[in-house]
Image (tube, rainbow, N blue to C red; front, side, top):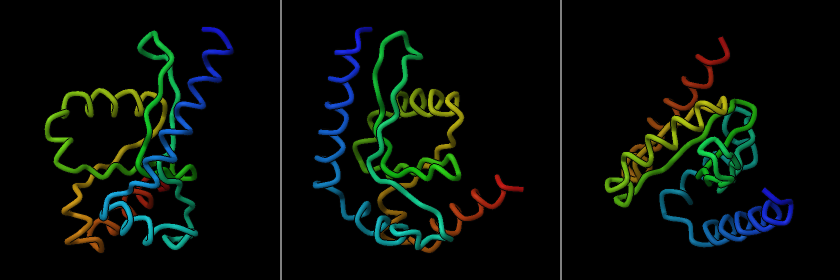
Length: 131
């Protein structure tokens, strides 16, 4: 792959991430308010964070809804759209796991109707991984 292509790919990812941040779902807004500025056990979270890889033989990227670098943890919030792409989501999770990252998925409904339970699950996952 040429360096020019990689620069273009990075620019495409930046643009998409910005657009996704501007058009956050209600669940994403609620979750972001709960974890931003190290509010969640002092952990730093990023939203709409790109991960580049060439595992499939082609340089490409995924955009994670939320990412905590310290815990190597990705949080994905899934709306109805994800019901139709379960196989792609599983493949994506396998690739991210291969890159040394853990992925937790929650439905938008879980965030909207039970944020405290979701945050407890995330904290337990981070705590258990640290042991």
